[in-house]
Image (cartoon, rainbow, N blue to C red):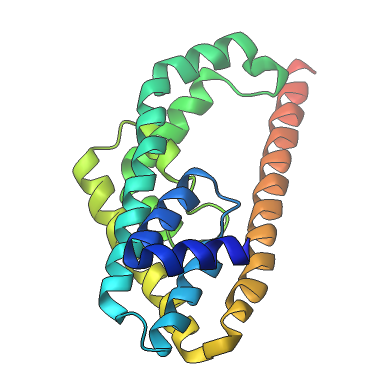
Length: 204
């Protein structure tokens, strides 16, 4: 992965950064935690400039966020509700649950998108619920861009400061991504368990 990223960045320069960050949003296993610190290291070697590299990273990320956003719009809230009506009973998710999530996202969607862009593990996926909840495109782009700019700038600066040790950024952040994923899975399982427990209590 590292050699492939390095090859693209070396041959395509700023366009390579944008392309890699675009692909990172479509295929989360490609880590921004390695791409942008490598760009920072390249900057420290006087082979790139700081702000154009950040701009390329942000632009690539935002272009990569749009396909997931429009997939969410294509699926749509009504289709999700219909799936919940048809199959939701198997995992204790109802139409009302979907409506509650949608109401929450309508109320806190901007914050969710902004902070989601700063959290490893969910930053590449936050576009999907934004699209499903039919969040307006302009606020989505604004809050995504602000969050993404902060994230990309921090990673680039870290790589610049660490120099040849830029890989330490990915080394330390990779476990964070796994922890966030595990916590989300545990929270979802706990929520399902609570729902089933409440259903049993109502039947008694």
